[in-house]
Length: 237
Ligand code: 6GU
Image 1: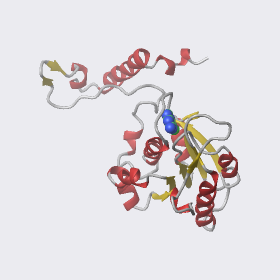
Image 2 (image 1 turned 135 degrees about the vertical axis):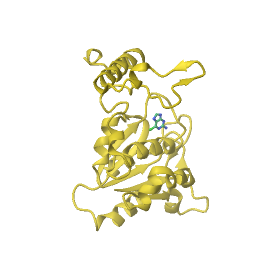
Image 3 (image 1 turned 180 degrees about the vertical axis):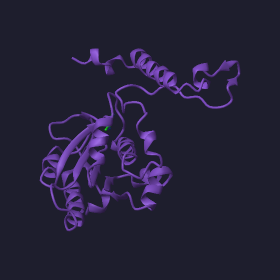
Image 4 (image 1 turned 90 degrees about the horizontal axis):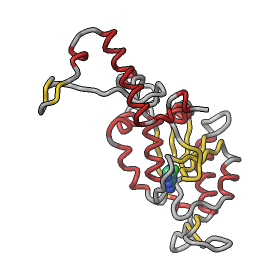
């Protein structure tokens, strides 16, 4: 999978070179290219923002550098890509919520472009223009506000990247996780069996695999009921 990131803070993405996603790039499973939006400015101050029409607080990202950046990425990919073009993801607290289902969906794509906005956002016309180059998705991590799209993009890239076959060494570890079965994950323990007065639940030492599976499922349901009742079937309409 190819991933392009457009940002005014390219160094935010240095961490993508470490851990599993770093290894995935070494193995050729992931090709992540980070671009500085200011490469597509033409004034001495490399200006990327301006005051909002209609007034209001803060600054808005100008459309022109975004247009040139997206054109350059589309042109560099166009030759090798047939079909509907990339998915262009714009992180935004005003977007649809990014979930594990979104991550699974986007993990099946061959090219993603993340456009990281700062300030009060990007000139709205950029999204309509981006829709001429591919499929546009405005995506939010949840109901809170970050300073810009960088950290949100990183979270989405990690969630998507780890679902690409070969990125996570043991594919089974992808299955028994929070959110993959619509429930939170069961609690895990390792040695020692007794630690600072707390014992590992005896069932886990019993060797009875059926009973262990049943206990783990009960734990998943109970934790989900306590912490995330919104995930349980009777909470959905
Ligand atoms: Cl995707 N962006 C920003 N700026 N804030 C957020 C967010 C995204 N998701 C939650 N808060």
